[in-house]
Image (cartoon, rainbow, N blue to C red):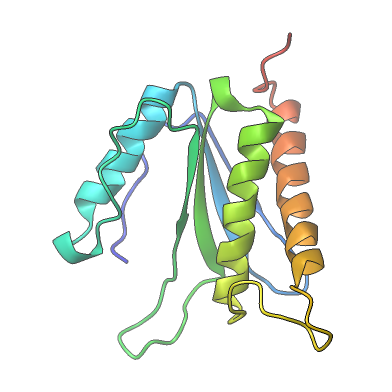
Length: 154
C-alpha cells in the first residue's frame, strides 16, 4: 500500500485487540462526517486504480474500516497495523463504534489467518473470540474519545 497522509483529522490513536498478537488498528476521529468522507475519498484517490475501495457518496456513512497490510515486495509483513478505523465526532455513539469495531475485529481475524468465523471442533462458530475482540476495540475507542472530550453529551 502506498504511503499517504490522512487529512484533517481531529484525533488519532491506536487500539490493540489483543496484547498477545502485536497487531493494532489506527483510529482517526474527524470533526464532521463530511471531513471523514473527504479523507476517505482522498485516500481512495491515492491508490492505484485496481486497488481503490469504492466511491464514498453516501451521505449517511457513519464510519468505515479499511483493512491494511504493509509488506515488502517479497510479501514479508513489515508492520502490525491491520486496519484504519474512520469515525466522525457527531457519530461517536455506541452503535456506530460497535459496528465499526466488528469490522475491525473481522479484519484482525483475517490478518491472523482465521477464516471468517470458522467452526470449532463441536461445530459452533468462533463467536466468543470475535466478541472479545469487538469488546476490546470498542472499549478502547470510547475510553480514549471520552478522555479527549470528543463524545457529544446529551
